[in-house]
Length: 469
Image (cartoon, helix red, strand yellow):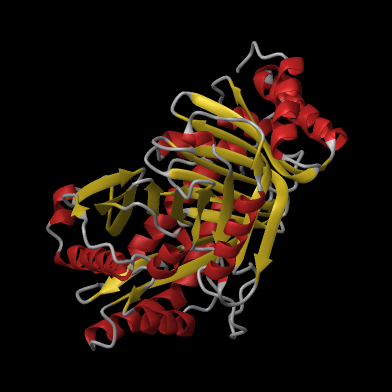
């Protein structure tokens, strides 16, 4: 079912399935296998055609591009994980698949983006929703050397079904011919003026005055035993004077930070969240559940042995490991294995990493999210006390920074990352957020340097400079 598939045969098969599975109308899903593609080429071809899009690409696992919304829910306020679960259950219950795919990677998927905290009308109320859940209209899935194109829509009789089939077939042909289509669209690539780097450095220097006070307070809290750990972040915003070339940035991120998951959540042309996250919150491919502890930071240019022997970084890392294990126990998962702790590099930055594996028959991804987020990797310990202090000390709402983004498929498999090492393009400004974990033994200057290192890791990819200092 690739290049040699004929439209008439495809149409006949889908109509036959419709007659067997659907009375007259309903929410349907149609899938067709397509040749192996370059996701960047396809994203560049369609990114300006659709207002909403999402991009998820990792080297080892399922990647996707989603365009437009078939069904969606947006929530402000509490109970976001419960609402997400209800949305997930209702839509997969109603969604009728009219094609049969042998590979589970091709299954229908719903995509999710949460905010860091629920919006509860506090002084730092966020300008992003607590939950965005979307069943995409168009989904392009890539796994190993296989690719699929899926379209979802509500049909009312065979006339509207044929319209949907014609739409997926048109998109299929455009994807297959994406290389030649892009030649027509090609133009000069955006370059950045060095003054924008000066703007970044000036904003960073200005923000560091307050950041030092905030981090110093965090150090006092852990030294006094009020908190075991707290993760405090800084945010800077600069005016973007050139057009954002998102696809080129994604290409650079893949080349220079290959171990990461490149992600995009494009609400519209004026609000785009993107980056390359090194941190998976969890992945579940039945029956394999994997959790990741990622904490403890060093420049990749440094000696890794320093990180493995650092009392401060090991302490920071162990808070995360112990928390993840407790979350498994809350979910009544008592059998698990831990990998050896190691240093893993993600471009300019390296982290201590431990993976936790378990085998489970089934698990609700939203209950797991509710237990796991926010972990000590991005919040602190104890969780509620650390959250309160973050809201007190940080002068901005985190929004989607360090929040879960991911997907759940029709069989209950799921994967979620943490939205870090990225930026938000909003109303011709670009916003960066980065943080560091503070435990007993933390040193102010080193925490400030760590945040600067994390800022630089994404800034140099966006502005295509070797060193933004």
